[in-house]
Amino acid sequence: MEIHEILESLKEGKISVSNAKKLLSLYSIEKIEGFAKIDINRRKRRGIPEVIFAETKELKEIKEIAKKTLEKTDSVVVSRLKKQDRAKILAFAKQLKVRAKTGKNSSSILLVKKQPKFHGGMVGIITAGTSDIGIAEESRLMCESMNCKCITSYDVGVAGIQRIFPVLKEMIDVDCIIVAAGMEGALATLVSTLVDIPVIGIPTSVGYGYGEKGIAALASMLQSCSLGLSVVNIDNGIAAGAIAANIANRAVRKNN
Image (cartoon, rainbow, N blue to C red; front, top):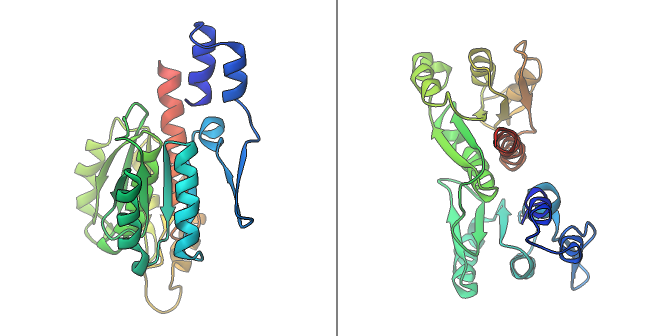
């Protein structure tokens, strides 16, 4: 249960004050063999699940953190998993009898005890090119872990600008849009000038020579003259997904 659900249940008399107090505990930390401390109540407090940054961790550490997290919560996102560890984590998910949701070209995996129910908001996810899809899929997994439904449309960048207009018509009812773009990152600015929806830009590390590795895209998005565009760090699909899902879920709660 998330915080608003706990409070509503308490108000309706479905749970006791002591149970509500237990669920709302803010400082429940789970220690793992002296190398990790899991914030197991982050989901209840902020609506965001635990995320394991796997790029710098050994496989054994990833497994131990994932297992302990899933003992206490319903889901965990494993981000930036090394290629050689991907199949092993998928096999580990089967061993734990949990679902593993993956994304195309993505190094992230969502582990869940049961199929997520999309009772949250709706997020649109767009990429400029096919090289940006892996980062966009990282955002999608993060949004779905937070119960948001996603509408995706990939490879609609400014190199063929006419492609974006029918896509935006399909996304007229979403609560937030994520735009992943490399090179000069122009698509994020373009999208944010055309919609009255919050837009989050992800500069991706796609590009040539001067300004490569996402530097040009990041600078371009940060210097955008379009109001309403927010920007996360280079290739940070996890943060973009978390922010977009929080915006979308809050919009749903306010409308109910």
